[in-house]
Length: 509
Image 1 (cartoon, rainbow, N blue to C red):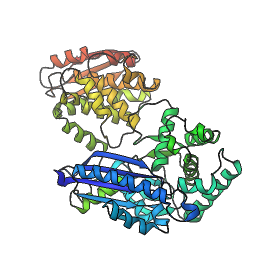
Image 2 (image 1 turned 90 degrees about the vertical axis):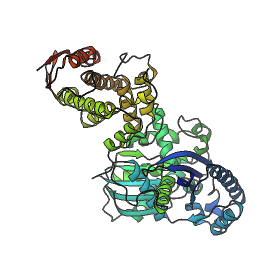
Image 3 (image 1 turned 90 degrees about the horizontal axis):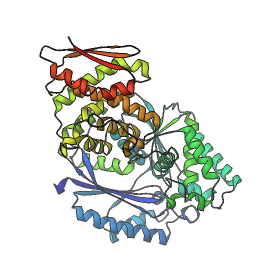
């Protein structure tokens, strides 16, 4: 099994990231370890042109520690790359040789275009972008890479020296920040974007971003919204939130920025420059949405290494959210026939309900996902399996769902049985009021559909549903005796009636 373990190291301008994974027989991989060290390799590089002795020492010490961790896992291969700081440093190549001699890791200095390609591999592995025109952005300490794409097809690659550390040292060395210095930096960013990108017809519908600045923006916005999700991966941030966040950061000195909720204090000195770049980029492209890819270059390295060592297919089949949900369901050994039946019945009910309650396609997908996964908790035990389902789904890697949507799916599945949603339930209380209403409605549908397959043998062939101002009438169709299913639906229709304020009437054709 150890022959299927790989490690990837990304030596950036601000930090080093090391990820260790195990590739499964199905060509997927699971993360075994993810180590980070903030070494500020690019510190002083803008002035002196070389990596300083102190930065070199911090980096060597961090890599020695990471190498010991890697050796402990017995990996098959290590893929290590150095990006902007080492690429620009006059002593960059000498430093790479020093790493090989002292640490025993061979590091490749990659171009900005190669950085962009690695970031794009990660995006396509994590987001369903089929038919969407978008731009992928990886913002590091020394440079920013941009990939313009349509679906899985890359159209253009760009690399700009607009990293957060580089811009901070060039323009924002004073504390508190000087307004004139900040204006000069904004003008420099704007001119750089125009110089490189003007003339190219790039009209993305959204940005998909990775890198420390991007994930920090997500964490700060999440704190501003008072949301609590387990990860920022897949999180969505709007342009107006970036504008408000930047305005707030500009009002604070360095000490004040270190106390901003969601921001790592080690990044407080460079965050203004980083957020300013994102703001200018969103304005330049005219996009309103930033989607967060927490993984970035190091995951791209893993994918590339897996293919090189023939542990993963050279061309990955296009995934859908439903593929990912079913893959996770099977890993938890769900009773697939029952889950598919409950999902089908849930969608039939939803098709009649949704027009009058402001529900749409995304809500239907969350309901279907929750229906397919509602019994995953059996994987742990029958007792309290609805609660186990919540925790399993909340921490699952559900391709195509944002952290908010994953939290909602988990809550919907959690209420397919036993008690109704209550504010004393921590997982339910954490939700925004509109999301609590949505969970109640979708869980009410799921709960009802689950009751309509009480014997778990898919005896209900179809439903005929009608909705009035006071009644939701469901007629069950099937060739067999449906008395048990009728009873099950009546017993589990309580949440539906409460959430939709309709009397539920069930009959058999």
